[in-house]
Amino acid sequence: MTRPARARIDLQALAHNFSVARSAARDSRIMAVVKADAYGHGLVAVARALGRADAFAVASLEEAIQLREAGIKQDVVLLEGVFDPDELEVAIKHQLQLVVHNMEQVSWLEKFRSGASVCLWLKVDTGMHRLGFSPADAPAVWQRLQRLPYVKNNGLRWMSHLACADEFDNPANGRQLARFTEVIEHTQTPQGTAAEASLANSAALLTRPDMRLDWVRPGIMLYGASPMMPAHEADAGLRAVMTLESRLIAVHQRRKGEAIGYGQIWECPEDMPVGIVAIGYGDGYPRHAPSGTPVLVNGKTAPLVGRVSMDMICVDLRNQPAAQTGDSVVLWGEGNPAETVARYAETISYELFCGVTSRIPRCYYEN
Ligand SMILES: Cc1ncc(COP(=O)(O)O)c(C=O)c1O
Image 1: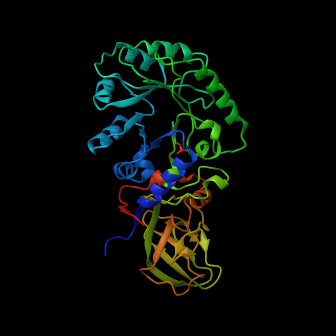
Image 2: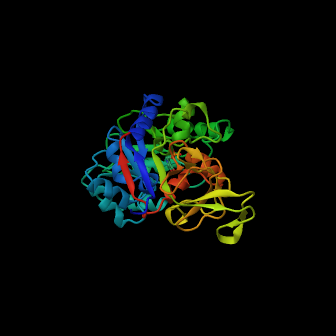
Image 3: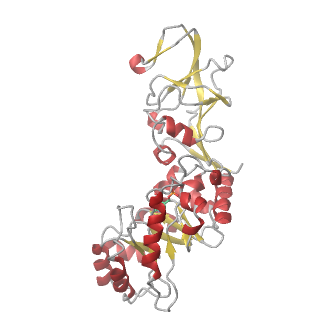
C-alpha cells in the first residue's frame, strides 16, 4: 500500500460554486482567481474545469504561461502586472492582460512597442494600501495609458481591491466603494463609453450587489470555503472542493497518564484508544493546530491530540472504540470545513489550501 494521504478534488463542487457566483453576479463577467496553483487545487485542472469563466487571474507570468501551454483560451490577467520590462514582450506574446500599479510599469509601457493590442487594468488604491495609485493620482495615469497606441477598444480598465470585505458590516467597505466610484465616474474610453471596472472578491460578490460592477474576481468561494468572518447566509450553498484525507496507520490502547508525541504535551485522561494518522506538517497540515482540532475518522469527530509531527498526527478515538488501522480519515473538506480547522489553527482556509505540499497527490473526480 502506498502512503494513503491525498487531496481529493471534486470538480463538480467547483462547477457548482462557479454557478453560485454566476447566479449572484448575473450582470458581471467572472474573472476566476486561480493564482497560487488555484489555491493549492491544481492550476490547469481547475482552469479546465472552469470553462465558463470569462477570464482567469494569476500572480505571475509563469502561472499565466502554464495556462496558455495547457490550451486555455480565455483572457488571463496578471494581478501584479509584470515585475520587469523584459516580461512585457512575453506577456503580450501570450495575450495576457496586465495590472498597472506603479510608475515604473507606466514608464516600461511607454517605452514598449507592440503591434498587437493590449488590455491594461489600472489599479487604484482605495484603502487597502498595498498596491495601486492614489485616487488623486490615478486620473493622470489613466490619461497617460490611454495615449499608448496599442491600448485600443475598451483596453483600459479600472481595478481596486477591498481590505475588509470579509467583514460584512465594516464601514471601510463603503468608503472604498465611494472612492472607487468617484475615480471611475470621471473617465471614459476613447469611444466615449464608460470604462469597465472590477472591485469585488468572493466576499463582496456574495454580500454586496453594489460592488459587483463589470467584473467580479472570486477566488476562495470557488474552492468552497466561506469568504466571510463570521460565516454569512450568502455562502451557505458553497461545497468543499478539496478534501484532504488519509488513513489510520496504527491504533493503540493507552493508559491513563501516558503522554502522546513530541514534547509529551498531551496526557491521556483515562485508559483510551489513540489512533495514528498518516498526515503531518510535511503534507501541509498545520503544525500549530492544537489538541482538540476536529479530525473525522469514519465520518465521526476524533480530536487531534499532542503535537503534529512531520508525517503523522495522533487522534483521540474514545468516540469510536471500534476504529482500526486502515480506517478513513478526513482532515478537512467534506464534513469537516476547512474554515473550522483554520480557526483552531489560528489561520484562514486560504493558507491551509495553499500549504498542501507537493507530496500530496491531487486526485480529481466528479462527485
Ligand atoms: C487582487 C485580488 N483579487 C481577487 C482576489 C480573490 O479574493 P478571494 O479569494 O477572497 O475571493 C484576490 C485574492 O487574494 C486578489 O489578490
